[in-house]
Image 1 (tube, helix red, strand yellow):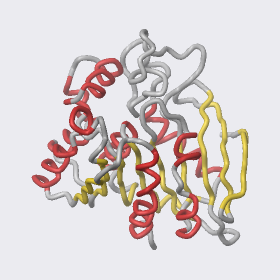
Image 2: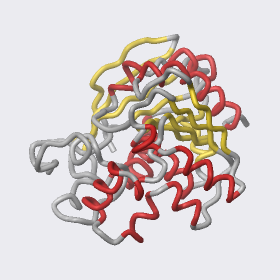
Image 3: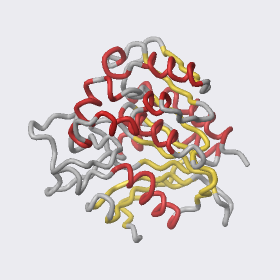
Length: 281
């Protein structure tokens, strides 16, 4: 599990790094970023995983997320994977659409051709990359949490619901909470998993909750000026599902905010403090 250092920069007393490695899960090289805050020699630190949205790479949150000051203060490692496999031999959308294929892996393990060989982002973010990170950075594997934005919010919430004992906290910015019911998700899940909607339910937050998955609670922020709010995100479906299942949900509707990193960066510190409380001890 060797990794190549692409870049490192000092920030808030810690180190922001970007790294590359050969992924067995995706059959491609994958790039990810890790921020390690200042810490005592030999210390093991809690880790927050951040899953990004459509069209993004590791770079979007790394460059625009404004997380490092809070992570340095709270002693949190922050890891940002890519959103999908990339390379000249990796199939993308036939029409070069932004919402499927490259940059739109949807954090599933594809079963449909020609995507099944490379699009194994579920295995990558839940199994392979955690092992790589644990082998090279001072993480405390017993103190992990996960968060994400949009498509990555969908990923973070489904990963947490299916691994409730691994991730102590889960939060999201503008998540796609019911991909089985919205255009982005229907396109992606059909393309990667096929037409059998029963196979989609393991990758749908609302469906997982309806099917009995439990979690300690979620923090979710959405912008009231988000152009995707009504058609693609539909937070009211998550609110109803959590209410019926008695899963604590803090759903904050932020007036004037859109889908961008201006929104995410504004409330990033809130989320990291929320995670830090749950990662103590």
